Length: 176
Image (cartoon, rainbow, N blue to C red; front, side, top):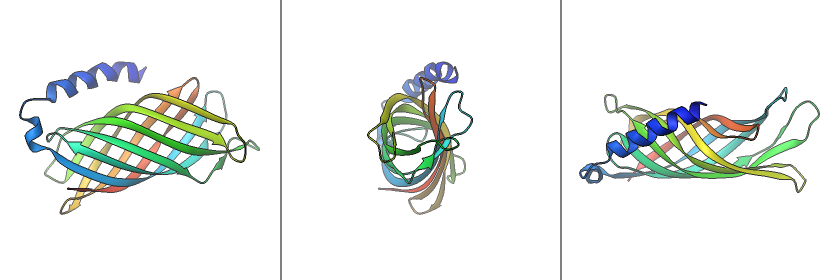
């Protein structure tokens, strides 16, 4: 429900922030994140924790909007439920737009939305589930050095057919 309400607002804001001068301030960035995600299924009592490592590369179009690509993979596995199978995150990737407001050249709180495709599998078996979905989240960048930023974010990556992958990431990025 939240995704259906936020999607039109996000698209209108993104399109309205584009202007002929927006690309005069472009700045590229790249970084890496550690993710603490969970995989949950509707009606199940417990979730599986899925840790991940991801990379991201993006372009800041102007002070309010950026676009980025991300790719990540899981590290480790976790038991799903009491005595259930061990699940692992095989991969995820996507494209996203971020809308934010700079605060005192140090903080950059933002909303992020885009598209994610991911796959979760049962460890040691050939069973896997692959899904894609509209993703939405919020986060902040904190500048701590010349061109260096700390990033903290919560994202709902996939929420489809009773299964959901969401969680927090923390990482660093540099501009170039």
